[in-house]
Image (tube, rainbow, N blue to C red; front, side):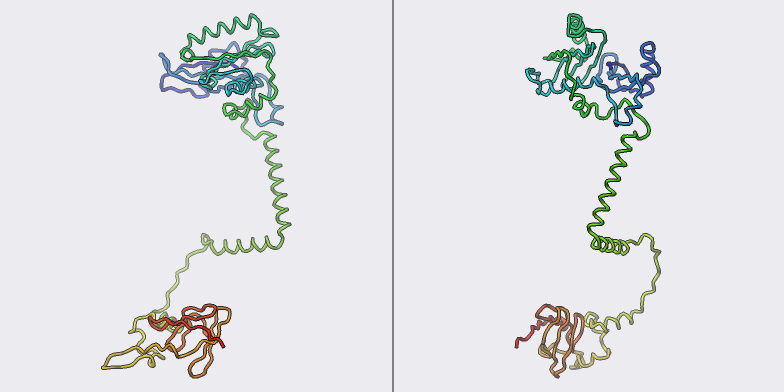
Length: 363
């Protein structure tokens, strides 16, 4: 892993193919052609000669097919150092105080490799690793770090940093820090073993999840039994009623106007029609009178019948003045009245614009 800088125009960008071409031109004698090279952006900034873009270049020079059976992605082991540095930046490392600006120079020696990481305002901006060092941070390591500090002072980006904290770690304990770093947003979307198809481990996990879901559904079905069947049947029936997408429209011929009038008349809604429509209707002669050549409506007498009882809040039992007993439902007519509403102990009758409430007589 190393930091690689590319300069473009101020508004220029590089495609993945162009990056690989430029990298091959710069390092054609360093890396073998079979190695897989990844370019992960670190930071970009404007300089005097254009836009400088710095990438973390990761070279995977060993086959990773065996990892596909157990892991969804592969990342370098040394990212554990990122986890340690992140803990230091967050002030969770004992005995180390970091400046609030998040600037940190992190140096570590692990397996004869010297690692130098630079964080600027809490963001990783530089990564370098070199081979061939001893068992501990000796004079050679100190000399290399001193030369790197001179580079920081002259660099167009790092020269602007103030209050840089330094931290040295000799043979760090990497256990546990790899997983914490792998879950960091910077690494979570990266993979050294990218492939077009689903990896075996991921495919196996999906299959196990689908099987578990199927078993759960079967268990719920078995426990609910008939009630679930009834619910599904009801939902299906409602879905059939509400589904009109596959039904062809049918042209219907509306009935004649006179048929509609007669239907309304038979249902006891004659008072909803204009007076001229009711003239001459059978059964309406007793409800009209003539005075000076004008037609007068009959009066609404509220004492033409008495309420004997109500059945289920839907049927009313009444007795007329002639002693005849009848059963009425909402919409039925009796003499000049029509049943508008039936309650639990009363009935509301309507005659023209007049409404009369009848209560059950207590014996």
